[in-house]
Image 1 (cartoon, rainbow, N blue to C red):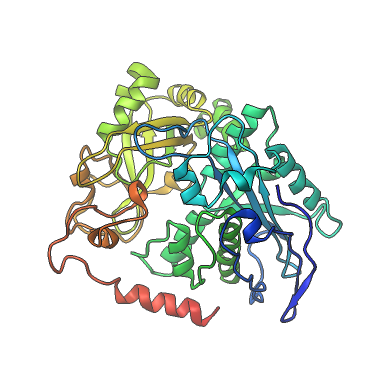
Image 2 (image 1 turned 120 degrees about the horizontal axis):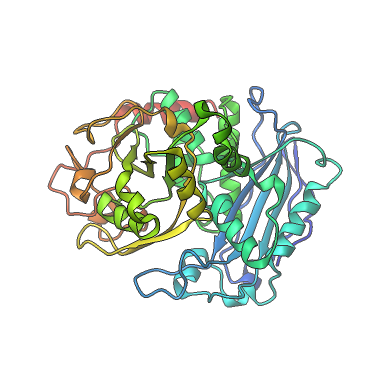
Length: 442
């Protein structure tokens, strides 16, 4: 495990304190890019938080149908974070903790994806060491007692993977990591409010591109990705974007205790983390497996982005609040879902899926069907029964797939089929104008 402190360096007018990171030769990974200093704030912060903990984890994983590691039994092998003092506009800490895997192997797929090798983990510590290191940093005299907010790209790191690994080791999840802001949803709200309707800001690279942030380092390197989360966050803070942090533990307790007030009861739950090509014929058998006859009584809706494509989320509406509560307890900690490949469309996929109370999904309008054209705002529609229904109207073909390889694989939002001539067009002019506007104010 890497820990410690690197000498403070002055870049421009900003003092930056970072962590010691072993040489690339020692770790067997590519050299780390030079970190830029935090950019000056141009407006006040919309949240009460002064300290932001930007995190990214890497965990053991595998690919294909015959996997050595399944998504419901993974272990965190890199616990990286960057702590940013927004009030002082300084980088307080930059840490990269490697964690030795105990139950699951480090597969060739995982090494190729993350750059982490057996050599990298040979002298690594544990998840407990990483959590203790985080707490030491938060106890620093310049940070201790000040309001904090964690920030991650997506919900999986803090709502699924960390609780699962902590439970397996008998460790508590730190209170400070039970409340966080989802960079993905925050960036999407901001882009929509700016009129950038069809901008795809789902992957970290897409978010950075849309916000005018230059990508650095290696994707799926935890520390590099944590730093990119910070740079994207700084852009959002400049625009006074509401980060809408959520305490997911308190949220679950409130949902279960809503029996105290009939007016506050909600019989709906969100399915979060589905592949973009998931359809009702994939999900309903999975729900029936866990819920039995109650699955046949619920309604299933897909959450569409403003361009009419899948977001990886869905909404289940149960006949009663009591039925929703039973499902919420049953799916606590996530459940594994896997589906077979469809030739020319998708590979075999497997996911650990989160079931949670509704957040912004509660305010979305319902459509009678997936529209032929894009939308002007996110919406709900009946979950399609076939992949073809996901691509109604003008199909959105994957550009990389036309060249023979798409690195997103099952996570790609676009159609993996050969596109006819002229079917793929450049991103629209409105989005290009918006990105240039963001860069000009950076």
